[in-house]
Image (cartoon, rainbow, N blue to C red; front, side, top):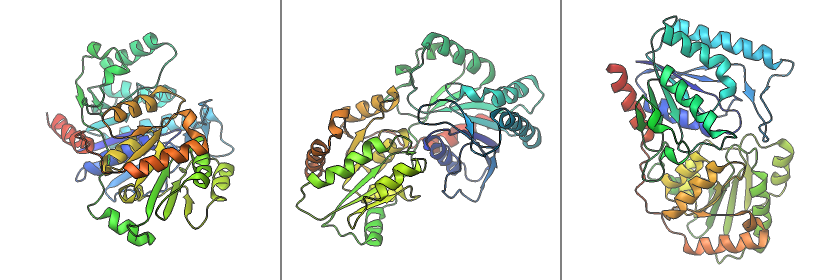
Length: 385
């Protein structure tokens, strides 16, 4: 089975890593991952081919797309991307085409996606199975009725299935999309997508770092990093007020897209017990080894927290409803504690961290985290049919 998976991350890295897990679960098939955002420094499985479109990104204010390559105009890059993507489908003729998020999001990329979808539909391109790969929660829209009408129309005309990477036991898509009943295609809940830590991850990571079990390890992270300074700066300041009965080490991962000046500001506060890095491909092991996680509330980080069953404080990014709604649902099942804006005052944050350290214990839950494997299984069955 040949599968093309299209993933366009323009702000954070969650979309990319979620798609990567699906690719890993499809081992044994011919997988081609199409990417068009800034490169992420993480290894891909040898069996996954990649096709990189000229990169487009956006800023923390979502003020529009811009090319990452200097000297190129947006229109020139869009024209080149549209041509390259269409030619790829003419050449590859995949059995399945998986599109991450569109048409629920990434409307700015319809210039390159719609020609391919139209070509598949009208016979100009090979008749691939077309499925939308979607996370659990949608961001708010200015005109929900117009937005939902457009999404329903595109899905019913050009898609064969909607794969929702969530467990209804935690949240269902109709919490943020009211028109599910109007879809004529299958809506499949796959379970959440996340890698799982290896059994000895805690011991191995602590041994590598030289941290014994009598030392408290805090791990802080900020997703892609575009807005991470709002959480991470007060966290570092809170250490001056944090009392602990045991030695304490803090590992901070700012995210690969934190602006350079903000990263250097945080890195300048590192010392013998505080380490600041942009990114680690071994983040899951850090969470498995941690006594407490302090993070934002993106999909991937939250699912990593559930996979590692680590005690966690989550500050949902206030720019949209997605992280807040997810964090609230996770708090309701006892999986995390939610930080609010007032909690980011350093003295107050130090007290919250200390109380969380005292109460820390493995988190019990029964949320389905096998979304990658279930997605792969569904695709194989659907293509066979």
